[in-house]
Image (cartoon, rainbow, N blue to C red; front, side, top):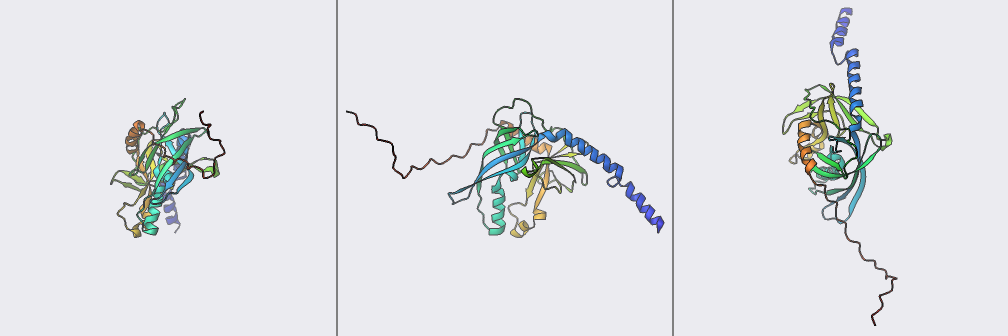
Length: 285
């Protein structure tokens, strides 16, 4: 019996993921990645206006999400699901109401908050519904180049490889940087290459332990043809995926040239029903 215990002890120590020395080395590598890239992970603060078909009233809400600076000019990429509540509303109506109504949303104001607390007003320049990406660019050229994630340093992890994911917590934690070490659960090749991970954080950069970038985390939903029963199975039909750098970089090239989205037109103010106190102009003699 003692012999079996010793054999299992030797086997466990031989597994890299469980060996204390290997675990400490992995944590040290992760901390280096955090320190090297923390300034490129920002908070996107925004105001969004949502309207529903057939209704004149609009709902305005404020929110925040994690964004990743991918260019020294300040170009930021985030998950569209985090900034566009209309996407979530549409899924909710389909699942719980059986309705195909698709609300519309407009981001009326947005800014990024950097690691040192600096706030930079930005414009939405590109949305990609299929990729679940949204790109934002500073309204005015930045005076100093911003720290950014170099998407050209791409890595292609395999199943069960460890990756470091960085994101920003909310206001309750003073927008502090958060990190986790996750494992690649699956490598999905269709309809495009992506990596499944078990981290509920979107718009975040992910790195292999050698410091190379894997990509940006987004939300993958079931296709529109999925049944209501399938949509109810959130564990299988709502997954956090990492889009590889090459996919994000291709969309970013379009974003660099794109014009800012136009702000929604506001309706003219209705004339007051109360009589005006101003005197009419005097008649010419």
